[in-house]
Length: 499
Image (cartoon, one colour):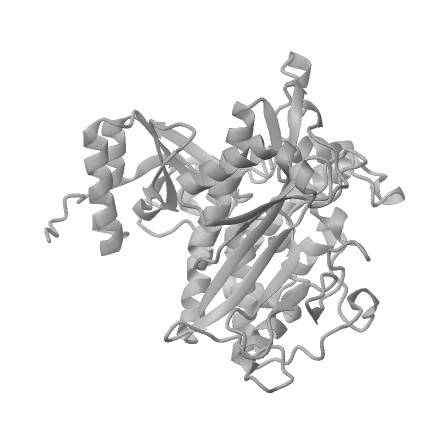
């Protein structure tokens, strides 16, 4: 095999690719030379895991396979609505990093293993990127880098995470895009969302007739999932009007996170081409729309690809000692991890008793009221847990990283999760989860655990981003506590289109 470094440049200088990535890049370069593709999107997730992107022509893309792509660092200063959370022209760019002052450029480095041809745009190549400083070091605020670091920590304990996605979202029909000047918004002031209506009636949970009526939509999404190589398993009509749930087969954590950002992007782009609007906002403003969630299924594999969560047959244990320690870590750190699992003001609209969403840090056997739901039985090879805490708009790299790091702590300290809860909403002795983003951000800010695991610089930056979002919310909705369960107009503008 020819191992000549044909991609010598920035990437080769700093050793940023594995041999597997190099081999994939050779295949991509050959595809570029074939002329079958016209343009190439190089994309990177921001703090909210929204994809920021440049479109390159073929020659520029081939250059990117050697030297990466110059790309502004500005989005590391923007909060969820392009509000400027940090002054980029202040000392160290306002974020404590001299290399990123004045909205200076960083370098996007394509990950060839993520390359796809987009099924809905068949002349367009797409690749996900890591983002590096000119020194070759990862940008410390890159969430994908944080996930890779957490994966490495788990591997030192002899385990790898196996994770599956279960995601809910809404599809609506667009009546008016609201493109008049009065709707445009500005930095920190999102544009008016489109005017929409429900696409089908809700409250016919998992109705076959309903699923047949919406098959044109679900079939198009399924075709694109499969065309992208996403391991789609099931689709179903959920409870709300126009609410869907898609589930995916298990993957390693990095692939699962990459799949989530690609899936959300695909859904929004595919639906827009059909005159529809998709949103992963937890609870849209419309009264009949119930909250959506993102449940993360997890187990650990040990050497030999053995499921380390399987309890010994004939015992009364739901999970092995390894599984119980991992769960205990999730329970131990659930409060301070809330910004990772539920990063928006709107995400906390689902955290209430008797809502199929957790309000306390609990675990239970096949119990959808618990935060951690155990599925399987002693000796069952597919035994795993489902963490029901997340919202669909969560940054998957940080959501999954928070699970790995919390689980590692449980394993390292051999924590005990205590008994399972038969009535999780009544478990007053269990820690109550944050009920709003303000509480969650304060908990993360004080978290010595996540500061040690992810670094003060990263936590300070993320807390600052959340505080910017919170301050805009409180300025717009000073009386929100008078009706804390009501979705506000601010949330509608902030999240309905962006998420």
